[in-house]
Length: 301
Image 1 (cartoon, rainbow, N blue to C red):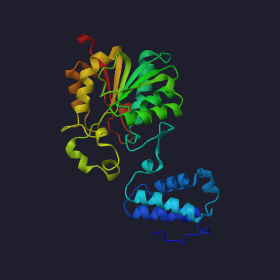
Image 2 (image 1 turned 180 degrees about the horizontal axis):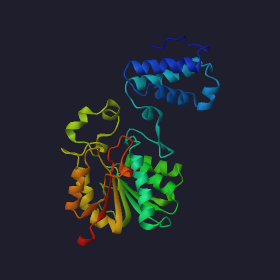
Image 3 (image 1 turned 120 degrees about the horizontal axis):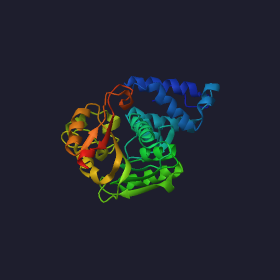
Image 4 (image 1 turned 60 degrees about the horizontal axis):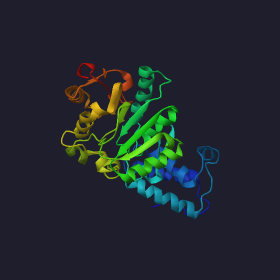
């Protein structure tokens, strides 16, 4: 398996190159980054040490630990799952098999929410928000960490997921401003809220089989699948919007890369008006619209 002697003379740089090559051989595009993250976490060392000492000797125990981690990645388990954490919006979040692995795309939602609340209500506004289907809590915790004057409520159907969110809230010192509720979507939650956010499931059932193994085999299906057309979760959320969004409030949702037009229409049918989504601020790095910004239609209020 390992093509160098397992002895103290084996260097960190040697292992790093071997790991990169083996990851590339099975078609993992992020091989260099993945190998480096495994090395740093496996040795509990900062990147600066590896840069300064590329030939740092590894003992047999360290190599065994690194090889065990690498074997999991070669089997297409995500690096974040192996490490047990994911960096999101500049902070480290604990994850486990009960929660969705946070995606960089979701940072667009957080950035949009922060900016739009500041623009809409003013930067000093003590926003009260609801995060529906919080999972790891990455959205709610990030909002609270960025805005010390805000308070939030976050829901999830899974008590295990809420335990993860609770731990992340404590880690980032926002637990006293976050209420966690175990419910399906927002059933029974008392509004209204200035802001409602969610990254709900939006994968159509038939598309699940086409997902990368890192997603299909390691993210909880309940956090991915949303019925035949991928819109079931949005129907639930839109149906409850009138009792959740305060007059003049906002709803900001993450959406699939091709769902904007259909969701604009679906939202309108429930009395929600979508803002223009050709604006760059609503797009991910690939240029796909990732955020739906909605307001209650005043004419229906």
